[in-house]
Image (cartoon, rainbow, N blue to C red; front, side, top):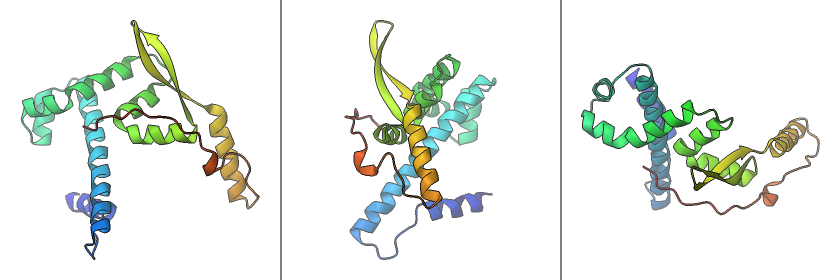
Length: 171
């Protein structure tokens, strides 16, 4: 199983044979994306473990890490995941994605599939994400027409809406 995982990892983060600067930088960026995905998955697994009666110590043992180190690295995001999952918001999946995969959400915002709105909660202004069902439907029709060989109409890449996106630290 470990050998299979390592083979898959090598496929995802192909090491360039030529060793040119651009190729090496590209490989490092792919590796960083894999690290972020692993961190997000570990966050979800720890949150699920704790929700099902597990402990930080058991999570640390499974990760071959010190409890304090694991707790310090993951507690804020695990707590945020737990709050989002216990919320009744219809868009909690988007909130989870925004927490764990902000680049994907930024891409969906640029496509117009997700709209950013402002709302007040507990006396603070917060960013609220909403699915843009009509934009998603237009893009689905566009994809369907393209697959059927008909000329596509609808949203074209050059007409994507541009939104100023706040910079987020990647932990």
